[in-house]
Length: 313
Image 1 (cartoon, rainbow, N blue to C red):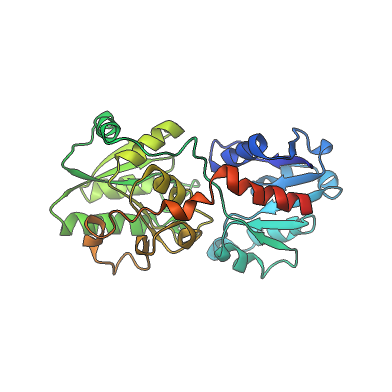
Image 2: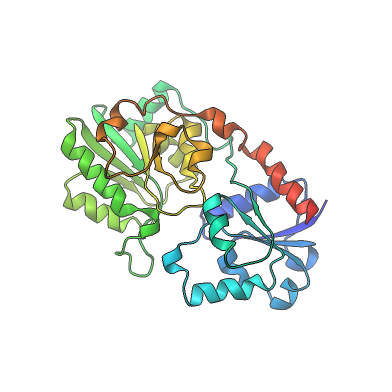
């Protein structure tokens, strides 16, 4: 067993959960202080300067790169990557898209290991529970509920769309569905920094319900209350919704980025939201939830790949 210190950002976001779940489920020993470890895992690479350079250069350093956006990988961001690369011994990436990108900027070894999902958090609900959840969120039973629970507005001004997350595509797609179908569309939003989407939905006169900081249990209920979850990202490491929606039993369609091909039924992967027949979400996409594809990525099984890698390192 190895002594491992996991650097998390303390942002109450997904990387914090990944770090905490690793510490509680790994066969290795989690250390609270980087002085006391064999390996430092930079699970939040943007926080790497929180650890002294002298400590980093005297430890084995593993760095996760979740995803990179080519348009943003310039000047300061590239400089930061190259500076950190001097003390990194090994990279972990969740998908081929990220692997292909960072391999152009480093000669360090890179291992592709996807994310896990926790079956203690994400599990299906009964039909009676779904009815109860929709009532809880004030959703009418004749509405077609579309979910989106990720932040997608730039924090610098809380106005500009975070284009790698595709909020512009999401809003265009929802507007198209609303215009072309008789069913009443209701959007269920979760997560912070949703200002761009909120403003677009108001402009397009599309009903929505927004919960800014729901608990994980609330998010599970929100997935269950949806008829469809839509992920329109241009760049991703996961995203986590691929596992979460599927495990809850909610139909999902997603752009072909990140781990989509590893998690979803082929029909649930959308190559071009602007060209897709909008009726697919009301007909053929149903019953395409593919639990078989994500079972091997469940936490208790999949964490062994991380453990094995740290043992080798």
